[in-house]
Length: 143
Image 1: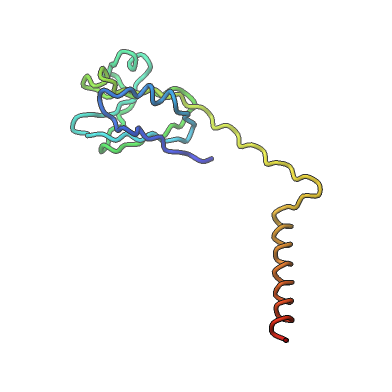
Image 2: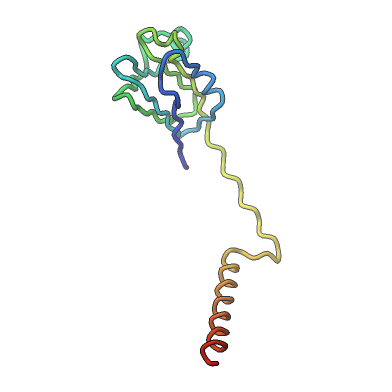
């Protein structure tokens, strides 16, 4: 299963609508969120839905903050809620993401009767190359 990095492209700053950003993204198990911010002023806390709705930073689930370029792996199918403490949540520094299972890969198209597989195409090209080499040898080198 492939994972991807969903970056908060504008960083992690006040007065940005991260809800609008997350509403236009799809998040799957195995994806990562990247938070870029100045750790002297801001942090990233994972909280529950009630704390998220009320911008309550007490009793957080996990402090994601390490160095200001911090990542969190989305490991479960569930909603995740993140905010910045110190009142910054009231200025837009919060984001909720709903994580889904990665949809199964589409089935490969069936090979139609009479069509060539990649091995058959490779073999055909090889035969053409040999035929060209033999013809070149006879036409150019022998005459």
